[in-house]
Length: 305
Image 1 (cartoon, rainbow, N blue to C red):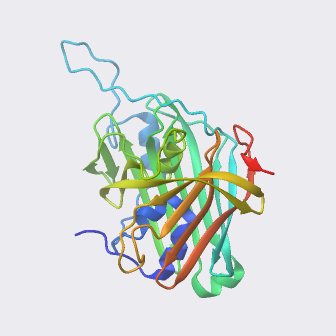
Image 2: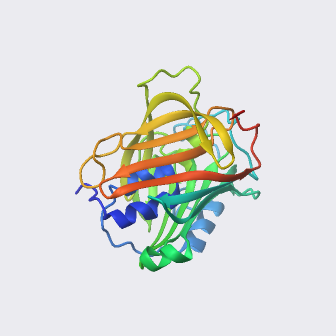
């Protein structure tokens, strides 16, 4: 059964997980999630045991086929120590804040260094009375391939809780959840790593109307995220005027969105390519998320005087 859309309150909630989750969360199915043991699964990954996926030493050509190699992505967009903070508004109401952080730690998974990304979102004290959100997402992303090895989802939205962990085996094109294995597409992302992979793409030569597709895995399903490039635009924010690339994520119209292009995303038109603003028009109003603080960028933000 295809993912059923959630009520409008949950639209506000998922914005705290930042814009790439938006492609997926509105199509989410009301499923019961079994709790997973984060400590055991993470230890299994680090140890490389077969519970989640097995990384064997190089085998001889006579005994087995060669192990597939992961791609190499030249990342000049982000680094450890980067921190981004956003203010979220529902109409004219200040609803809460969201943040993205590339932690300074390094975990080795499959003998490969990873980037540890943490996304948080929470409503303020006023909005808590309407619909409290306390969300935290983590992703351990291969530093060279920009692919997720391990994804952690801890959601508390209006009393609805999810504890959901995914281990990825890109050599076998699998996602492992509670010992169950699901086939994935080549170079599949989770909802957080998809954002960081998108930041490594080159938009300098893109033309209006070009589509960028990112393979993702979410709620036990493969899902192709599609970004339609709409050109450049200077937008005003609390941190200054910023020259941005503009995109329309292609959404499913219907119960929440009026059209497929009712969501707009702006990312800085510079080496950082950080998300600067998300704005979406839904059937019951509008939601906007704006950059309010940043630090640890790889390059100077492309501000306009």
